[in-house]
Length: 327
Image 1 (cartoon, rainbow, N blue to C red):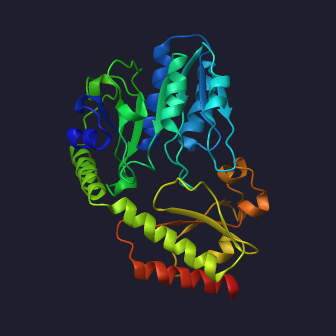
Image 2: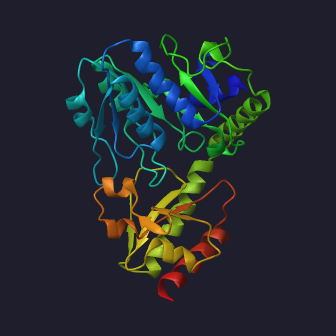
């Protein structure tokens, strides 16, 4: 299982550490690197549209260990400018953490360029690839990353298992102490069944990638976008860059709230770009960081395709959404 996970990202088996979740893998990478560095008030750099597992871990490092956290802005496509990272780096920066792909828009960050900039100043580079692993090719040497997070349920493995790539030579403080399991970085008896499941999923993803699944998924995604744009001329806005995950389509239909749109299309299983707490809707922090107004962000809908999505389902989804938007 360890070898299969390693093969998916071009790593060696002994560079894979199994964890119980992507959040735990991110914590091991961030906290582990900060504590292992042994510096007073170390600096960590991340960016505004990261998953809360990274942003909140950074905030905890600030509160518990006095770490100085720099959160870089993103442009209108949700991307970090390598020049902005270069300007933010200092000699006391121990780690830079930037995700591979955004979970709401699918935006693919320029990870190789960002990692190279970080390394020029001696900082480690962590990449949360939870959304990207299994959907697009990833190769840790080409990316230039020192640490990379993979999550099981994002690539059709069971929930409750993930992994962290730890490049040989990178020192981390363990997230769980007490035993020698997982190279001493996560004590406790391993969950063999879930590790095997993650390995099997990684193997299936590698085979499907070689068989052209990402290109087929992207073609279906673009077909869905075209159907909606053609049927609702001038009303469909795309959020995110052209270079994004093949399965992700984050759009808004002008004049219709995302919640209302999906409520009027009950046959569609999708999500909005906002969170709903106690009946109060709030705009997506990802979209507002990209410069969208609160009103525009509340119109967002995230449509995600999967390995079993068919042309017929795309046509049905487009028809249902168009009816919902015009009815």
